[in-house]
Image 1 (cartoon, rainbow, N blue to C red):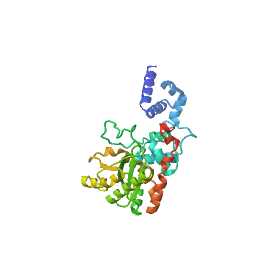
Image 2: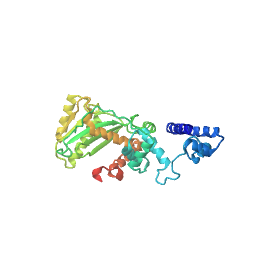
Image 3: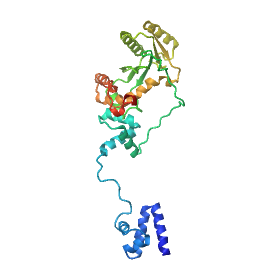
Image 4: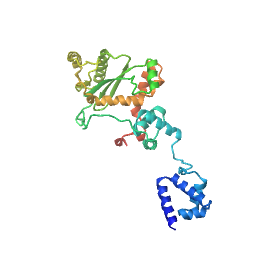
Length: 317
């Protein structure tokens, strides 16, 4: 009786440590007593079915996965979500939007989240120096079309674009630069593309936007904020004064941010990320020349006009 009690403790402790070792113990006891199933079950205080399972089956547990899962996502789609999740580093909401734009499949944000968790897909870390959240403008009192942010984007960015899209843009000589000016209050955006980066294009782009605004009955004074890039005033006070002399005829003013203060351009900088996700990483590969590229850019510009219900903000629901 004392021997049986010792064996019982040993078996259950072994079971907690390793199920494989526990079944090896059952096989060993079964072999020592000549293969008697009932006696082995009494010694180890387990059922005869457990003894037969250890004798005839494998040492590892059987899978508890159900034979049929009608509501489970198709394995091909799960592989696609995992692949794009690892490649882009996007989380559920951004990734569901990206998959809808690139492949035309609508996946619930919660389905994508479960797939990423199940496959241990980690988010790419984002480094930031900001410790407190500050608003760039007093949005409650900011009138539409008074404060603008202007910036350019280098489309050929190896860190932002897939390798095949990057090579396609380079090989087919598609536009390499994107010009964006965004209204801080309404997020209305004006976009242009070019093959070269030059201050002549920058000046012309600003004049074109100002004339469009004045032609559409915008009468308030306009302030445009830029960085110190060579496509604008390049930090030159003299050049900035010359430009403002012309802009003053349209009741507008241009100013540059302090060097290194890129956080002051947060609105237009965030639009660059949206362009990478919804347009530049997907559609340029379908364009073979500049005309097709511009036509596709115009078509995709209406992306925000329709978003699946699971991508809408709470206040839109």
